[in-house]
Length: 212
Image (cartoon, rainbow, N blue to C red):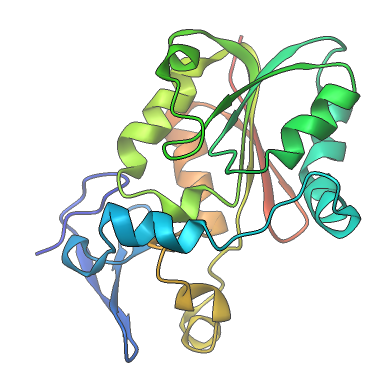
C-alpha cells in the first residue's frame, strides 16, 4: 500500500505504468504520484537540475514566468515581501518581482539552502515548476501556509493532470524529477480543507489566498 504523500490517505490505487515508473492516484485528493522507491536519490536529482538553464535575462523564460508574475502583481500591494521557494540556480522570477518593487527572499534546497528565510513570514510565496518535484508535499504545503501572512498569497505554476488518456501520452511525466502531479481537483481539495480562496489562471497557474 502506498500512502498519499500529500494528504496521507491510504485510499490509493494504481493509475498508470510506463517503461520507467509506476504511478498511483489518491482517491481523496486525486494527486497522482510516483512511489517512494522509484524516485531519484538526492545526488541524481541535483545532477538533473544542474542541466537546467534558467537565465534571468532570457526573454523567452521571462515571458513564460510572466504567466504567474502578472496576475500575482495585480493582486498584491506595492512594496511587499515575498519568498521565491525552489528558485533554482537562476532566480528569474525573483528578478522580475524585484524589478516591480518587491522585496524577494530566496530558498532552494540545493541552490539557496539558507533556512533562515523559512523562519519569517511573507505577503506572498511563489513556487514555479516546483510542486511537481516535492518528495514530501504534505509538509511543504503546511510550511507554505505558515510562511504566508493572513491575507497573503501562494502562487504556483505547474502543469496539471487532465485525465488518464492525456496522462498516458504526457511528456511532463517523463521527467525523472517529476514525482507529484496535481489536478484542479487536487487544488480544490486543498483550498477547501485549508479555507483558501482559489483562482485558476490559464492551464498551469494557481493562486491561493490565505484568509485574514
